[in-house]
Amino acid sequence: MPEDTRKKQLLELFTTITSKTKIVEPMKKIHGTLRDREAIEREIALIMREILDQGHFKTKLSPRQLAKLVAAYYDGKNDTEIARALGDEKLSKTVARARVRLKLFRDLDFKMPFDRYGMEALLESGKTMKEVSEELDVSPSTLREYRHVIEQEADTTLDPYLERIRDVMEDRDLSEQMTRGVANDGLSEAIDIAEAIDMSEL
Image (tube, rainbow, N blue to C red; front, side, top):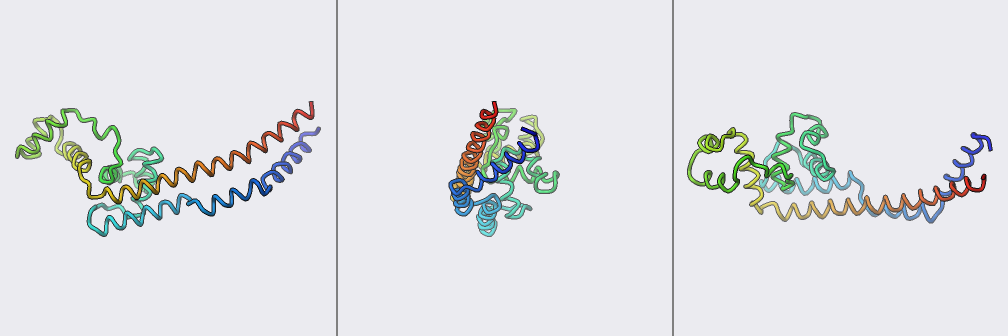
């Protein structure tokens, strides 16, 4: 069979398959009932606005930027990548502080070059940050970052909001899994038929 004819035949075959009711209808149902990424981010942004309006959280990032931060964190992006996605790589430190405030921790946040509980004891001893940082041999800014992580880990103020955000993200993961499943079913059928054509030509 000439190559052009074969390509045309396969194109017609795939068009026919993907227009079948049993494939198209479930896809329409899924896209009609499960939220896309934009809708997910809008919902998270509304929760973020509640948090900001209540005065629980101070940041230069907008509710929508915070929503994008959350989505990017769940996608496995690091702070620099998240800042870049927000349009300014210089926001990486702002992103890191906001991420920690939202309890979106990374293992690296707790990898301190000294004993954590020793640091806490020193901070509670009445010594200044400069004195503690000198004793631990780290810069005051680094010490403040570690203190911020520990404080936010213990702070339960945002927990009700964060639970709502986790529910939204779990819905997103479920939506993506279901959509991929339906798409794969249609693709698998198309591949099976294409392979059957190949076998018939042997």
